[in-house]
Figure 1 (cartoon, protein in one colour):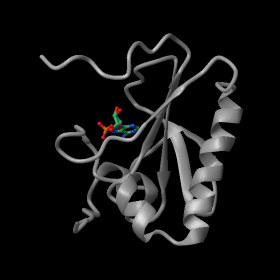
Figure 2 (figure 1 turned 90 degrees about the horizontal axis):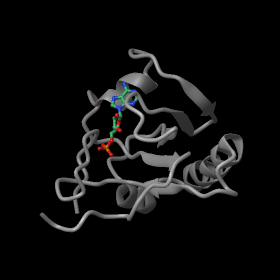
Figure 3 (figure 1 turned 90 degrees about the vertical axis):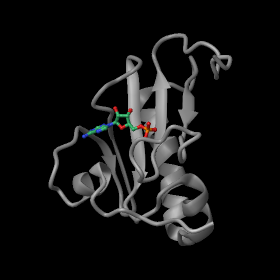
Length: 123
Ligand code: AMP
């Protein structure tokens, strides 16, 4: 599948410093920051710095260094947020059916309250 990256998406602007963000952790290849509309007491987004649209795009095309850095940064952020013991949810929406709003790969880390079932039943 072709993954066409739009360099004008909001997270690309954050990475270029054109929009502010509340950084949790920044590494060579990865940025973690607070979601602007938190849906739980803990709601952090983790994005790679490279131009990847979705998780499958990143997993297929990112370098080993990017994949390792991204994965380890998610782990470090979970540690910093102290979510490991009580629990948390990782979500990465992709495409139209996944209801992805921002077309730059991001993992949501959600915690701090009971998060309910993973999916709502279809309407
Ligand atoms: P998704 O539906 O998975 O694409 O989620 C996009 C997320 O990005 C939403 O939770 C938004 O609240 C969040 N968001 C949008 N703009 C910003 C921004 N400028 N800074 C931080 N989070 C944002």
